[in-house]
Length: 292
Image (cartoon, rainbow, N blue to C red; front, top):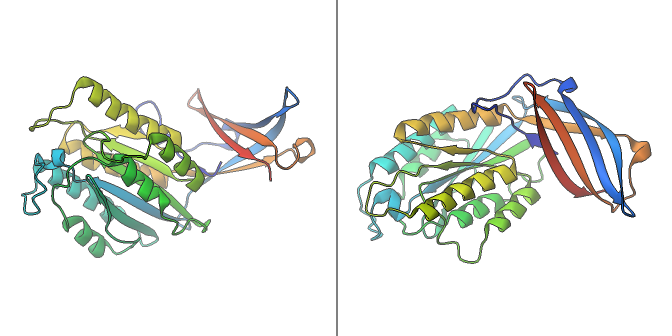
């Protein structure tokens, strides 16, 4: 099940989970009958020996600038300044064992650089290329972030995507939200989504559009094992980025030893079920895979 992160009903990071709070079972179909094997799970906290790699996607769509002209000399709006300020604070929290890359998007997706642990360089990237980029290729920006294979084969690195937008997907063409689900699962990467639905400019979405945008961000986060955060105003952004940073650092590696005497043969489709008791409330996590 790799890495997991937990938060309580108030949104605070959950720590201090003990092995006795966990139960695990592996299930599979055996000629129409469901067989199972007991597992012995452990949660191992991410520590300073685990390298972290973040990809931050930043929304430069017309609604962020309240300008659909694509004018590269357009003045930065309060929304743009708030987003960039919060991203810089996130970068400032990074330690030397952490890496980050920035993706900027509007109608198109721009990968500004590879991963770096230079705060000075990353801050320069945030400041550069800030102009209205038209539509909102939200799906494409997240899919691009997930597609980077750097560090993917390195078990000492945990990758995460932090995706920000103030709007709804409208420019990714053939890419669907299901593509993101499949990619995040294949790459074993969590997505933390941030939605700032503060429409005070020229473009005011319909209620249906707004609800779809919120649902997309919630589902993308949930399906990847991450969390969705909604910003009410500029003041919320700093807190949200800080919370996400703490959430990722408080993640756990999951190790499950299965009862080998009861396991199915190689090639069997199985479902692993992990139950975690969090302050009296049971959280259930699932993962489907094929026995190797």
